[in-house]
Length: 569
Image (cartoon, rainbow, N blue to C red):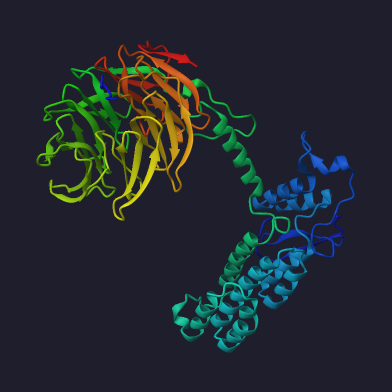
């Protein structure tokens, strides 16, 4: 144990080419003589009950039919889409919008701008931005056709008077003088121009309100949102695979690694720390017996010992994997940092500082240097040969082994006071702080570097968002901690779970989003000091205990005898 000190469609017309929403190549679309003069969708003659669908009465029937129609066109079912428009009397787009789209595809720029003004758009700024995009396309096509004077006239008399994107006007002027500076298609082919105009339509779709042009793949987007919500609400979701649209999604507890599948007994003392490599192929563990063990995770999930590393003179309390998973750093009570090669098990370098001790360690993002916390509360940077290349003095670290580096490699995370976490921008020397109201015992960084778990003296675990502004999200509790250093971790599919050790010999698992305690796992006979979830296998969890063992937890195996039990909370 590690003790912690204190309208109806009358006829059909063809859109010759292009695709926007349901407007696809040679697709038959409706000509709506009953559309409003403003160009917006015609109101349908229907009873109040016929205006909405669904039991909650919140889904507009017109909008619902329109997004179904758009989905049919997007999937290539043009005839069915057209038939739905005709039978329902609900057009996907108004005649005015269809005319506008065709004018863009035909390169009728001035006419399309005129039509744009006839569409019912309340926001004058949207009209100007859309007009700018259309006229810019006109400008470039004139340059492409070597009609420089007409391009200049368009710029002076049409684009500049709009008084939007003012910084763009000088750039357009420069292109007239130096047309070689822009990439123009000199083939003048209809195909290339049509492709460019379709791209313009895509940009215009982003500008125009969805009531005018239905966003592309809107129905698919809504279904994906619904599936994501079901997944987030599923407290056992921990497997990759398709989710059925036919039933509501709900995973069973069998997707969580809750059964002991292997017990590792190679350490001679209490196991204080363990960590899977980034690629999930290795596990490194350390103990109060001063030894570090490198384990290999076989393809079948079986874990075997590869190297027993000796060299530290006192207990080893922390391990950091290199970005490439070919080396590790270790540190502990002897106040030195050692760098080891995974293949050979050889100690490559010992980092020491005269008259001072090194209490924490971590890798730079590029793997070409390392950082250490020093007993004088400074942070040092070292090259791989053992030379100290930088030192930042001041209250920047505390006597704790934890040291994190954000995923972009720009900030170091350390404990600078008993209750304060420091995020230190080592290149700019910027500082950000997380202050808790009690002593911090350990912390853990999420895989994407956006979230931080902070374990506190009273046993609670706080979750912080450190991506940009610091924000406290919530807390996890239910496990036991009174005097030992107990570590927690993120894990599972998309790191949807939080796991922690406990002094009562159990492993606890919470659903990260809901913060609900979902499982406690029994099996160890001593305090569980540390847990690590395999980042490459959401069904593998490891725990280290004072009972001198490491337990590997996995999915329940049929007809297997278990040395661990599950307690569902």
